[in-house]
Length: 415
Image 1 (spheres, rainbow, N blue to C red):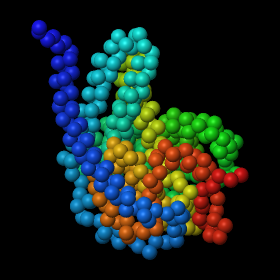
Image 2: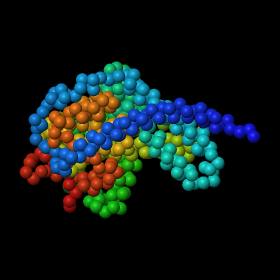
Image 3: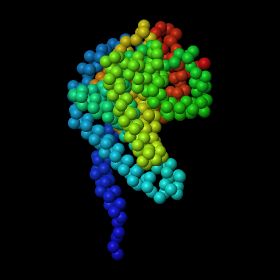
């Protein structure tokens, strides 16, 4: 008897064999990283505490912290950075190929809504992780952490951020201000805490699980596009501010041309999606791009909120704020295997604020090196991120001034 193998199956095998080899290599790397992380966690949990971060001027300087970090951690390799990007591009197109040519063309799609929904969710989660990696690479480019070459960083960053509808240069400018004013109650650029008198009605009932679910769902769905479009939860300006408006008070006159270029990049992607919708249908575009896009935005907001929102870290008004104190008002989080998926962004954010030009592949080593210097100023939360998000929405409703220390503000939820 002759065994018949369909041509499509052979094609899939030929496509997936190199992909499997790449994934196997990455899985081996991931396993070693996770084992090392677990060993470190066992050590760190012995000194884990639930006390507030110090709010006085640190006894160390940025120079002291830098001296503790191995010099090679500050080296930026264009080749190494590009290898991460190439890997992500391969996975991106492989997932697209499988979804467009096999999932959506399967007879099961026509006969089973459950198959369509289930496969759509799985695809959105996987592809959304890859798009999030694109965003992280673009974010590093904005800090000139991708390579030594600004032109290369801006080129890669412009492309990777445009793909996820982020105006690259516009966000680069506002994000730099976030780094220069982290922890400032008046001048922080994003997710500025509310005072008790400013809390909306719904937010006063976040102890109610239903209200909390509504808030979490709304934030994950629309917070990122609203921030970019209308500066939602951003710094208050004297007039309308938007990342897409070159005349926004967020930007200087010299920055306007590149803001327009950023708009053009996003419009080009939107136009391409529009043409695909005319050719393939809106449902096809929603499946291939819409689901992953929503998941990417959700993960970005989760990571961003958890890195800067915790009852244990303070905010400062102008009388107490200093750059180093503000940079210490961040918290590293444990996202499990997603730490590696998201290029170590969740678990090395303190290092990123201290040394924004440091590439992600050196951040873990650098963090281990400078933790003894930071001492009690370093905060790490091992709580699973989904539980942390649930608790944060409940615990961090507004900030109020410390009763004994003027200019220091802590999160609270009591009404």
